[in-house]
Amino acid sequence: MRNTYLAPLLLAFFALFSVPALATDMAGDVPVPAVQATVTVVDLNSADAATLQSSLTGVGRLKAEAIVAYREQNGAYASVDELLEVKGIGKALLERNREKLSVK
Image (cartoon, rainbow, N blue to C red):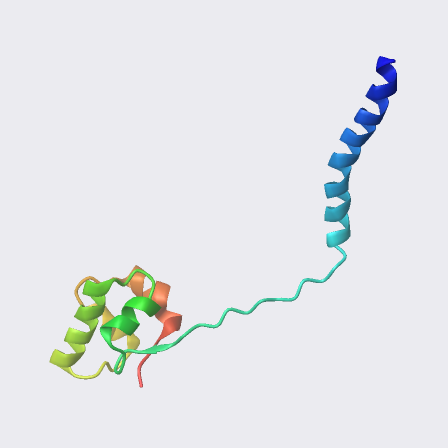
């Protein structure tokens, strides 16, 4: 009598773990559309501190305000690399955000 219940339970147990394996094999045949991320480009000469803070990685309120203050004291940025002159902005931070920055 015990064997009567054990066989269907084992069958159900093994079937439960084989279905995800089949789904994985079948998913490999389906092409997945590529997702392109859009990058918002920020102009250093016109962006305000709030825009800089929200658009750039690793730039908080104080660094964003320092970027704007440097622009107000020294005039428009001539190049993105001039951002290195701002206190608190290093090469790593600049490179992390280079594709998001422009100077017009």
